[in-house]
Length: 218
Image 1 (cartoon, rainbow, N blue to C red):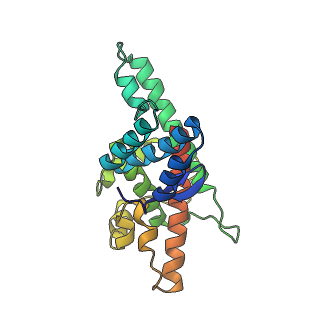
Image 2 (cartoon, rainbow, N blue to C red):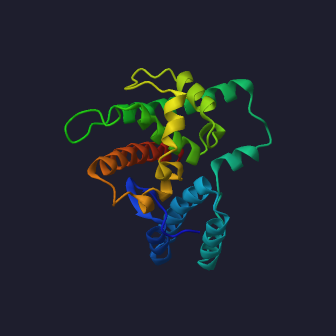
């Protein structure tokens, strides 16, 4: 459990340490569970079993019921399996949410009113978040399934082409190969203004996308 991890909570970037502090200091059971749920989402994205155990212990110490960790677990416990029609509907809803999140990112503007997302390597921010959030089961360094997924969404607006070679080359930048929750810890403060600007733009794109996908999962 790394309390320095930073993730999106209620549209703001917050450290895990702050979220856990707010959970422990909460005045009501509902507020306690709300902060715990935010931390739980992060535990799910990072596969942090120690954080899950900590949250369970703290909730039980406060006399609260043990939470359901993921909506998908409840689905797996249904007595009746999903029909093919229901599976297709859920798939269309899933793709629609991804499409809306990516469209939002494509429409973002920088301080000069120009598209925030305008270079091929900005697709790495999308890949990074998709991998961190286990979208469609995507894995590190597996670019073909990611490219296929993006292509299948039939986005109406694509600011710049997505290609495999650009994704492969971006891994030469050590910070971007890390999970997004680690990026701020490794921000290139000693780099030049160009390197910092590149980082800040990539970080903002990734943060906006993570926020959109977190909101639709809640």
